[in-house]
Image 1 (cartoon, helix red, strand yellow):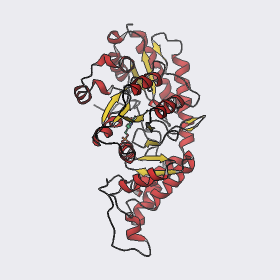
Image 2 (spheres, helix red, strand yellow):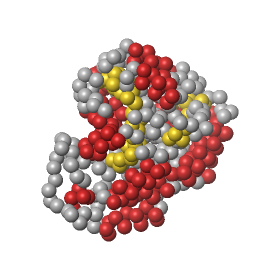
Image 3 (tube, protein in one colour):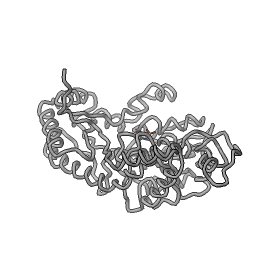
Image 4 (cartoon, helix red, strand yellow):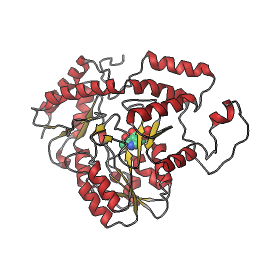
Length: 389
Ligand SMILES: Cc1ncc(COP(=O)(O)O)c(C=O)c1O
């Protein structure tokens, strides 16, 4: 069977000649691992976000792990996040021996509910860190979250994996708490295939994360091999991790960063076309709107009550029409590891469960042609017309 060339994939990276040349430059330089390119990427990313310190890492998961470690999270501590996220947001707390408490999302958006957070923190004195997630590029209510977290003596680590570039009145999402972490995974708006960036304005935290990022070396590999005073001698100050971003990937990131605002503009234009096209279809609920939405995801909700919604059937039909889709998110508390560890039932977080059951995320990526956007719109409207509600 020949492949369906009309298929519109759920996500596709936008890589051009600039990225290809950047990779060749690094391949020919003789230095593949973390070095000058990674440092330049950090400087450029810090300038873009106005973050005082930016640290390149090999994934957002690594960055979140380093962030919690630097904040001293360990056994006996609680990390609070929402169940409406990817598993590594919470798993990094477990890597450090801490426990996780989930807090439901608010009905209006996909993000942690500040009122529910206040109730949880009031009854959980061991809470040490609050980890809000800007799901899909929609900003969390950071003012309320920061105020609540501070009042209970908690640090705030932003999971900004979906939130680049997302400008709020208070600054860039990811730069509003104590530490923020971005992802450059293959499906993200700017990508290095695998990669991430940590930002913070706290120099002591930055020093700790920098140390732990590469084996706890007292000196980076780059300094050991290439400086004029290079020496084989190095010390190990800690049992660190191997979380550095290689130059090969950093070079791609530098090119992607230059295009970030154009990418955002293109995604916004696609979102606007979807919003206009679906506004009058009563079976579809539009995503919450925000003027600075980063549109990492465009997630529709099918209207209806809980189990009666045939979301899976809707996606099957969209796939049959050649449209790639996804679901955001399968709530963590419905997954074996988390539900068994904390004896959680699906109904324990009703908002996260409801959003999940009715969720259909549509293709949205820079480079999508207008006719591909048309095809998604036609397929969604045709599928909605067939759907029972
Ligand atoms: C909300 C969220 N946080 C964290 C991550 C982990 O990112 P990475 O794959 O860069 O480790 C993801 C992954 O997609 C995510 O969706």
